[in-house]
Image 1 (cartoon, rainbow over the protein chains, first blue to last red):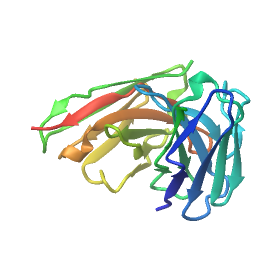
Image 2 (image 1 turned 120 degrees about the horizontal axis):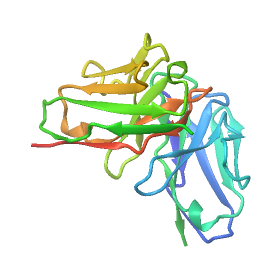
Image 3 (image 1 turned 45 degrees about the vertical axis):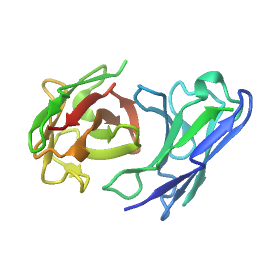
Length: 108
Length: 118
């Protein structure tokens, strides 16, 4: 099973600041990685797939990068609606499809 | 617009059974693999099961293998999850999700809550 480790667990930032979230895989997943955003009481929403492709309707301030074992989700300038929990997910080797533990981006 | 609507969540006693449904609209349902993903209260996301578009191929997480069965009725555009021998640790919001082109999840339902407790 591929384990995904997200860091930091919590990121405290102000609106307008840049957010950099990390996801590290226990073995290479190539570019088979997705990022999701989840707000309280809501279902997750797909942001990025194949490590760097933005999903339909996702603003350009969200970008993904990386390959192999190290991945980054960057939010270039935080908007108030971006404060949420973010999860990475791998689909290189499955079953099981696995998720990281999440990074909470909170208002400083 | 793709819509996924889950139903069937409830309070059930340990050892009991429950069947979840997910009604899909806005897509050619039979074309796409589907999955169930769950989230225990205050916890992260856990993939539960996946089924191919035609329904002939299924996979399960080890935590539910032998107890849960995923199925689909393409004539009704509906996905199911039959859950037997339920345990307290199965308590979670269960989401159905459409599998995208690269095995990510591109559409999600709003979730249905399953509580296993005596």
